[in-house]
Length: 365
Ligand code: SF4
Image (cartoon, rainbow, N blue to C red; front, top):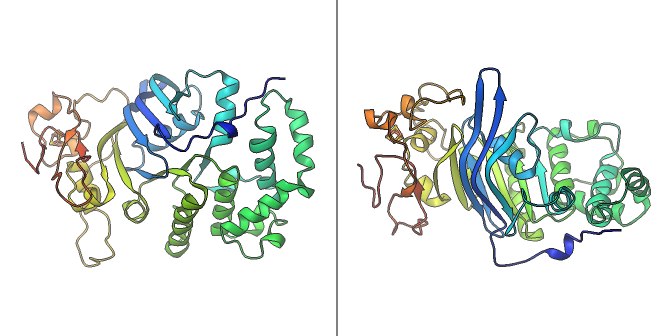
């Protein structure tokens, strides 16, 4: 029986954990092709929390689904690559990809009720994840029925103990008792913690968290983000954090990628991005977001909407909404280049943006 021992392959150094290169994910429709992800490059180093921020409809979730391998048909990756630990996920055999994605990459979604099974206790669901991903998941050739039987026996074994430990790690009170509760007996915040516990239970190298705190009130949101950071250190997990909320990014991320209409338009260390945003879209996002330290500041929403991602007719996708647009912006596609002040704190020379009117050292072109 062929066994793929993905846990034994963990590598603590060297290549970035995740490299997304020139990724294009498209959806054919009756009206034309939706270019949801249109040539994205993104890298996550070991132990980093990297933010992906942008308005709804900018393609963030499709990018996450492309990384995790759950793009809904008829959508498909038509070009580019997703490398995990230096190895192309797209070039692997289906069995190997399934084992790697199951055992070393996890995902947390916005709505835990859609991801948790209402008919199983929370403890059983986490134990099931532990058994499938760590023990059974490595033997990818086992029939699904046999896997289910083994999982059924997990309650009295190590997997059940691990489930309780994980609930404890995400600070669910009385974890032994609460492990026997069903999801509807948990509050919204506790369900989201349970989802995070489940996602981290197989100690993944990469956690993809798509709007993990959006449905929660601000206090619970802050607690969960703090726990995510702590868990990242405890389990040495890299995190791709997808959100429309700049405050979440500012609090949590080491680096930020700003996405607009299927493309990354700016990326920088978090400190540099907020101290000296360069792309007019990023500047607009920040100007439209309330700041805790400036409660009286007037908010200025970005005019217009994210465009329909079918056949965008202008070269810079932001041009119709951009206060600085000139004619050439509609005709010449902006390429990434260094921007901002490379000597500024937190810049490190890694601040880049795709705008025709921005250059190094704060230059306006
Ligand atoms: S290239 Fe032109 S339209 Fe696009 S963001 Fe820069 S200034 Fe605005």
